Every structure is written in C-alpha cells, then in structure tokens.
Length: 102
Image 1 (cartoon, rainbow, N blue to C red):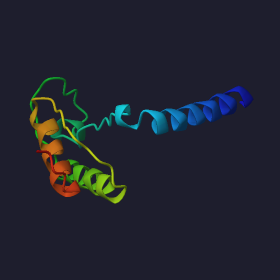
Image 2 (image 1 turned 180 degrees about the vertical axis):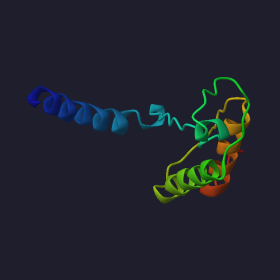
Image 3 (image 1 turned 30 degrees about the horizontal axis):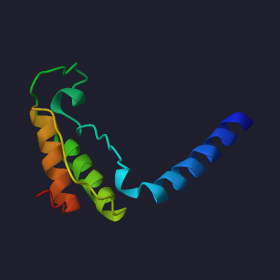
Image 4 (image 1 turned 60 degrees about the horizontal axis):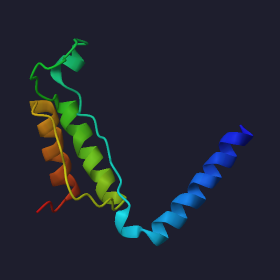
C-alpha cells in the first residue's frame, strides 16, 4: 500500500512538472463504450453484429455527453467503430456536449 501511494505521488509530481514544461505535448485519450444495445438488453453476444442502441443506451450516451460538458473536457477528435451503436453513441455525445469538431 505504501509503495502504491508513493508511486502515485511521484507520478503526480512528474505529471505536473511535465505539463508545465511541455504543455503543448500533453494529450489525453478518453475511451467511451457505446450505450446499451438491443442485444446487450437480451444478454446476447453482440460481436460485430450491427445492432442499434436501446432507449436506455441513448440515455447513457446523453449522460456521457453531459458529463463531458460539465467537466469542461476539451475534445479535438472523435473516432468510432463503423457499427450503428458506436456511431450513434458518438453522435449523441458530440451533440450533448456541444463539441465543435471542425
């Protein structure tokens, strides 16, 4: 436990020093899983099947967008799978967070 706390404190100090010195080079990657799909609801394995979001899945995506906006997370680019559920989740999050991705 002590080693983990010590390592975390060192990591934070290093991160702070790096961010001051190389602020333009710092990048964050945010991973967001798609909202609930119809097959998730039915407890079926989805894999590469192209199934849509449920109403709950759309609500989950809206909540994610609201959190991104609330916490003022700046997003420059969004990448998504070609599947409906992933694309729809990305569309909802972008709209809800009012992201300007030009």
